[in-house]
Length: 189
Length: 153
Image 1: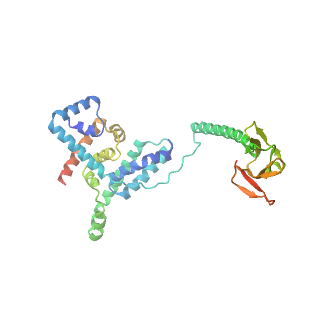
Image 2 (image 1 turned 60 degrees about the vertical axis):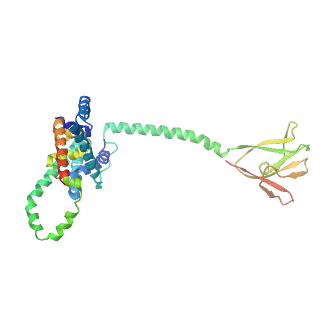
Image 3 (image 1 turned 90 degrees about the horizontal axis):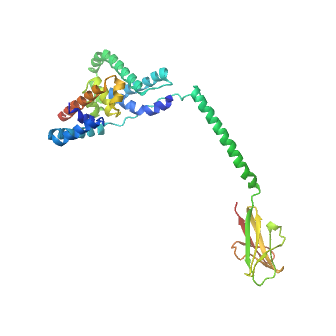
């Protein structure tokens, strides 16, 4: 009767009382201990011998989606949920969509000209009309903030309404055909 | 549970079980297909694992019975072409398969469920119709028998 415990132990089928009996037996009886160890060894050998067999493929028909009342309600729930999601998504995505067309980026132009009396900026974004820059207190900096659509623009600074200067902070420059240099600004979306 | 889900969850374990029950890939495949077919016909909306194994085992017994009827005939045929039959016997080098074949059908059925599919005694009892206590004894005896055979080999 007691030797069933070994098999039960291997199969994880012992209840608490049986566990106690099992541990006691292993502890007290040399023979029982030997038997348990050899049984476990044998189990390992057998488990190792289980060969991997390839399961044949069967064509199982896919279950019909709306076959019962339960499934129907589930289906309508899903439908309602997806409608709400689609609706919410379209509301949400519509807004930035209209903004996207006119999406403007605030770009701050800054130049250091402490000796200048007037600094203007002129570029493709102003249709080459000069736009005055504001003096930043007495620091010698001039600045202007212009809203720009994403794209590439040529521009230059005009100092005291005479001197054309490319933006010293920008490395991209191009000849303007009149002996001066224009800077190129790239505004990313 | 939908039938296709039931199939994908049970197929590997069930096929292994059949493979060791029949010890022949082709027969196992046939039974495999037939069992799912029967299951689909009658219990499409309510598939049941225990029933699947029952169907599998009964189909196996049916096939075995039929084979017995032609067994003599096959033996008679094989006496004519000895060289050819050698090839098919060479393939069977599965030690576990050989050991399991030492057990009688019912014990092998139960023990396969345990060692291959790692089922609980309770599950095996449900499938086979034996009591849990009985399963405990059968599995233990099966282990003892196999161990004895293994030592002899």
